[in-house]
Structure formats: C-alpha cells, structure tokens
Image (tube, rainbow, N blue to C red):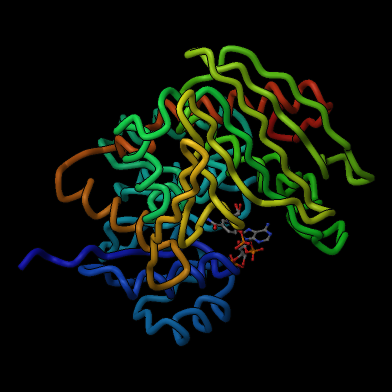
Length: 327
Ligand SMILES: NC(=O)c1ccc[n+]([C@@H]2O[C@H](COP(=O)([O-])OP(=O)(O)OC[C@H]3O[C@@H](n4cnc5c(N)ncnc54)[C@H](OP(=O)(O)O)[C@@H]3O)[C@@H](O)[C@H]2O)c1
C-alpha cells in the first residue's frame, strides 16, 4: 500500500477547519501538523482534528520533517509569503484562493515552486466537484455545441464589519478577490484566456469593492459576465450558453449536487451527489498529482491562476482598488 500523504495545515480559521473535516474523507491523507500564530489555537485545532504536531509559528510548521504538503489557509494578504516559506522549506503547497494579492505575487510563488521542484496549486476546490467534472465532460462531448457565453455570480450579505478580512484592505478585503474569483475562474475554465476586460464596481468606506461586475471577451471569441457582492445576496447561479444548448448550475454554483442541460426545448436534470462539503476532491487531485510526480494540476494549471490574477489586477485598476501589496 502507498505511504500516506502527510498534510500540514497553516492557520486555524473557518476554512482550515472545513478542509480538515473533509480531508478525513480522502483515502491516504493524514494531518500530521497544524501551524498557527498562537500555541493555544494550534493546540485547540490539534485537539479538534486529532493532529499530533502543533506549532506556535508558521516557521515551525515549515521546519516539521513529518509534513509533505501544506494547505495554506491564512488571509489572502499572507498567501504569497506563507506559500513561499513552505515551498522554500521543501513542502508541496495547496494555497487558498485567491492565490495572492496580485499577479506579481503569483509569479513569485510560481518561481518558488519551480526553483524548489515542488507542487503548487490554488485551492479552487469547486473545480474538482462532481458537477464541475460533469460540466467539462459535457463540453468536451459537444453536448451544447460551441460554448460562447458564461454568466455567473456569487454574493452574500455579510455583516459590514470593517475589521473582517472581507472589508479590511490590509487583509486583502474586497468582493472581487474573495468571491469574484469563483465566477471568473468558471468563465476561464469554459471559455479560456481573456483578451479584454471591462469592470465596474462599488467601492465602500473601507476602500475595497463591495459589488463588482467584470465582463470579459475571451481569446476564443466567447463573452462572460462575472458578478460578486459582499453586501447583498446574488442569484449564485451559473449558465453556459452554447450554439446548441445550455448548461445551468443551481445555487451555489460552485458546489451543486445537480445540474441541468437545456437542449431542443427540453431540460434534463443530471445528479452529481457527493459526501462532505466539497473540498475533498481538490485534495484528491493533489494526491493524484504527487503520486504521478506532476508539479501542477492540468485541471487548474499555474498559467491559469496567473491569468486570473492578471484579470483581477486589471478589474481593480478600472474600479479603483489598490492594496498595500500593489506598491
Ligand atoms: N475554498 C473555500 O471554500 C474558501 C472558503 C472560505 C475562505 N477561503 C479562503 O481561505 C482564506 C482564509 O479564510 P477564512 O474564512 O478561513 O478566514 P478566517 O476564519 O479569518 O481565518 C484565517 C486564519 O488565518 C490566520 N491568520 C494569519 N494571519 C492573520 C491575520 N493577520 N489576521 C487574521 N488571521 C490571520 C488565523 O489563524 P491563526 O491565528 O491560527 O494563525 C486565522 O484563523 C482566505 O484567503 C479565503 O479567501 C476559501
């Protein structure tokens, strides 16, 4: 039997707990270490998820010889520095979305992965859920002809707490980076790289965007519209329109358990069930890549992660949001 893959979890917040819960469903995965900025939080996380090594710093986690791959679940503003710390320590890295604050940081992370010969992937784990695998199969089979349009949106009415990472500019706040990445990555998955980007947005009192719409003309000729909002509930659906039909993903389109194909005036529902909260499939892709010696995932290549960062840089330039990391 293959050796288990030993995970380290960097940060102890909301999504770190969700990921650790789902990792229990992944065959061959074991969490050997948790890293935090505080010993007490590392210990609490360790108690909750039965993690033997609990580190009071991310540096100590990086130095742990019993860790193969680190899941970086800190706020966006730290992703680049944290991921590079772990890559330079010889760990593989799965880094939460958005990969970083801007394209420049993403390039530095990719450079670190390449110089250390380590795996790196942005944790857009939704892309690996059964419904999204089915979307790619339907498109490859030509089920709706040539896809020419994508409409997708993601928004929730979060409490307006200026210290929360969604609204705090120092932590990389803003609807685009946190929520808009989902519809944007869906658009690039279906329609490919962007040729032109046009964005409008509302920037709130903390100087980050709270509502944004990004239209893209893709190199292949398709058009997409991606919307994100942190103050209102959006439809949270996605639609792919092709020359011979459409694919509809219900709310929340990132991790639905069914989808609908509309063709010749008929709607066909296709079920895509799974256990857990939908994060395990991306972890399984990390395992597959490591076993195969692949340093990036063909389903979510680093070039696409870089392109997504470039799209968001351009959208932010147009709506007027700048982060300290932009210099
Ligand atoms: N894939 C998904 O479905 C999904 C869902 C939600 C969020 N995310 C992403 O995951 C990241 C974390 O989101 P979250 O919702 O888990 O956030 P969160 O609940 O606020 O947790 C963030 C954690 O990061 C650590 N941290 C390090 N430096 C920090 C700082 N300066 N301020 C606050 N926390 C700091 C903290 O852990 P320690 O104190 O232990 O160091 C904290 O618990 C974000 O980049 C977000 O976009 C992904």
